[in-house]
Amino acid sequence: MSISVQKLKSLDKESYQIIDVRNEIEAAHGIMPGAVRLKAEEIENSEWIDKSKKLVICCSRGQFSIEAAERLKEKGFDAESLEGGYIAWLIDTMNEKDEKEKADNAAQSLRKKFKKTIWSRFTKAIRIYELVKPGDQIAVCISGGKDSMLMAKCFQELKNHNKFDFGLKFLVMDPGYSPENRKVIENNAKKLGLPITIFESDIFDSVYHVDKSPCYLCARMRRGYLYSFAKKMGCNKIALGHHYDDVIETILMGLLYGAQIQTMMPKLHSTNFEGMELIRPLYLVREDDIKAWRDYNGLHFIQCACKFTDTCTTCNNEENRSKRVEIKELIKTL
Image (tube, rainbow, N blue to C red; front, side):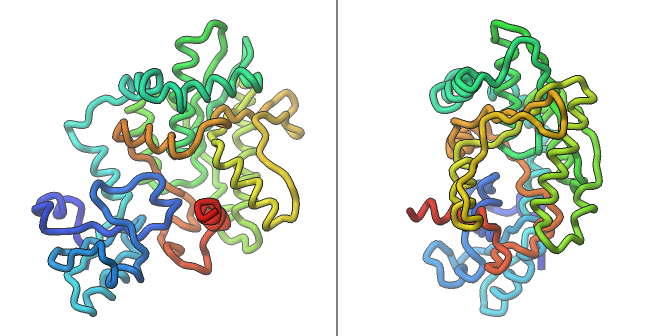
C-alpha cells in the first residue's frame, strides 16, 4: 500500500511520521523535513518511532519502501510506502507555484554567511593552485548533485567579481538519466540562474551489463566524454566538484583496497586530450559546509542517478554497499 505525495500533503502533519530508509550517501543529498532516518530493520524497535502515528516509509523511488511497509503492517504498524519516494517529493516541491527565485539568495549567502567556510576556501584553492588564468575557457561540469551545483554558483560569482577575464560554459552531460532526475537538474539550474548546456551520451546503457568494475568504467567514459565535448566548445579546462572530504576518502580507499598511496590532485593535465586540463576548485571545501549552504538556501538536488542504484535494489543492502559508504562510516568512527 502506497501513499502519494499529494495525499500526504493533505493530511494533518501531526498524524504521520516519515521514516527515511535510504543509506547515508543518498540521505546526504537531502532529506524530507522532519523525517527520521533509520535502516528498515531498525524501525520496529526504535525509540524514535511514534507507534500512535501512521508511518510513511521513504526510499529513493518508492520500491524498496513497499517491502519495508508491508513487513511493518504484518507486525501491526500503520505503515505505508511513499509513492515515488524522495524523488517524487523533490519534484513536487520544485513545482510549487510559490517557489521563489533562489539565485540571488544563493549568491549572497556565499559572499556573507558562507564567506569563511566556502567562498574564501574556493578562492584560496583558485589562487594557490593557479586553477584559473586570464583567457581560460572553463567547462564547469554539473552532475546535478550539491557539489557541482555549488561549484557552478561559485564560478559564476568569481566571473562577476574577478579582476581578469575568463570564460565559462556550464556543461551537463546526460549519460542516461531518468526523466525525473533530468527535470530536477534543469529546474535547479533555472533557480540558480545557471545557463546550462546539456549534451547526451549512452554511457549508462554501455556499462549496465558490465560485471567487472562498472563504476570505474563509467567514470572513465564520463571523463572522456566531458573532455571531448568541452574541447569542441572551445574550452581548455574542465572543472569537477570534488571536495576536501572526497580527497581524504580517496586516499584511505587507495590504502585499504588498493594497497597504494594516491589521491586526487587539485589539477591535472590530460594525457589523452592535448592542451586540456582538469581542475578541482572545491579542493579545500568541506562537505558539511556544502550541505549547510544547500540547506540554508532550501535547495534540493538529485542523489546518485546511476542505473545500478536508481531502482532502490541496493538500498540498505549490506552486500552491495559501496566502498565509499564504508570509508565514510570508518572516518566518522575514527
